[in-house]
Image (tube, rainbow, N blue to C red; front, side, top):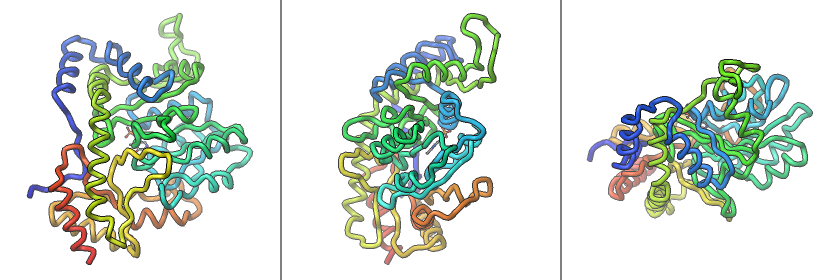
Length: 364
Ligand SMILES: *Cc1c(COP(=O)(O)O)cnc(C)c1O
């Protein structure tokens, strides 16, 4: 068997056609019909009034933060287990990163820990829908209402995930998405901010384009950014979004293939799905009971030797020198014992079988 990668984009004839059409149109930068279509279709899909394309998911987070006026002197609460972009975007805004522990089942931010971390300087919470499972948005929205906080959903890994039938990106004050090559949908590099707030929508568009005055070209009253997406990327995004149901169905099927073969393994905890929540299973996750970082890393090496690519879970943000802070118990344990298994669109049942067979053998 050829080696099995952890991730690989799914690019059909549709993506090729739309991108070719965009290239031929001459609208290769950030104006063009695909930008408008992608934004409109993505907002419709998420059930939000507005969606704004950005150059990547990190830019989407930063742009959302500054559009809400978050900056120096403010504190923003994030989960300790996430991709570093969540923390970095807060840092770029000038606000202080506050990391809190996660829930052991969903691996998303723990709402009780959020409550404990709130101070008079707290301005926002960024729940991350980690590995495709939505964070506890209903509880977090209530905390936010009680303390007058902004909630920005980091949905970079969870396009199409839902709570009680409502899609992520439309549950908080704003949501941000990534279209990096390994995400649920990809445009190569790319991002999106969703919101129902007209004022925020206007701020997002204005700050994305160097805060240029809408009536007076090349006049700027504020420092903005170039966080625009290209029409070429948007063309790919339109095609990917038209295929999202097909993509999510396959993700679920892949997870079920793993589940069928691993659910009897007493040491293994697989992705979780809370009642009323829809996990999109961006990547298959396993945590191995009784493992430590060293054992986990040796398992990754051993899988590699059998031609199977895997990834460790993220390291806790609070372990990084720039964000050093108090230890979080659950995030640290998950981080040391967790790994992601190959879950890309084109993986076959046979390949999943091969991964599981090797994994079980190595765990004996
Ligand atoms: C990928 C990712 C991002 C950043 O997206 P980029 O498009 O790579 O900038 C942010 N947050 C999370 C949780 C991610 O997984």
